[in-house]
Image (cartoon, rainbow, N blue to C red; front, side, top):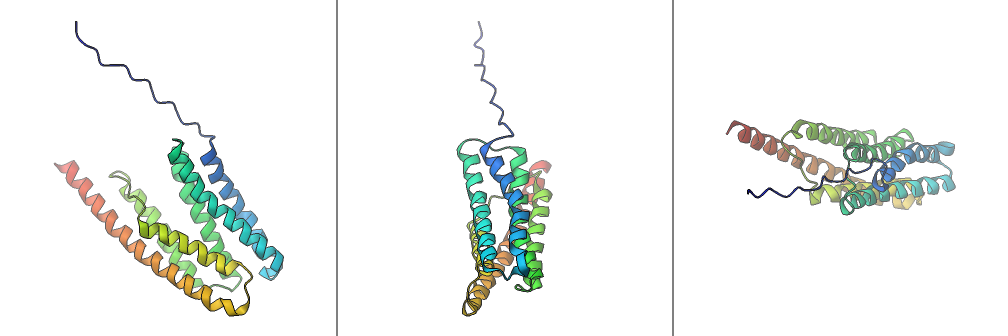
Length: 200
């Protein structure tokens, strides 16, 4: 009589409608609401600027919370993997473009950050067959500083605070470029390792 391997129960499928995905979708929904608040009276209404800053802060917090929920409670789905980075980039991208349209942020800053984020997304698809590049500490710091910098521009601070906001945004741009170059290097290495593994 031969020993049969134990029959393992099939993993329970993760429902598409879960807390993590709902938070991700809510972040996408908040993007147009945020823009509407930002553009009231061409951005010169103090009350609405505070509301816009509050919406941006809440949406940014959901970006952190939905990821933790998904990992902690096993709520990771293919939809979440795609929608989460899209929602993240939609939020920061809309804020940067909105501030540039209002003439409060130089367009080159928005373009540099947008090119980096789009480039990294394309790189992810380029190496997806060979693996996933985990977020680096620098990448996480970049995201945090970007959020702080954008918040500093959205909030209706007095004129004397503007140079401080410029410095914070300058740090965010520098981190954006450096971490983007690091991602390129890691993507090239991962792809090369994947090709060597296939060939061997």
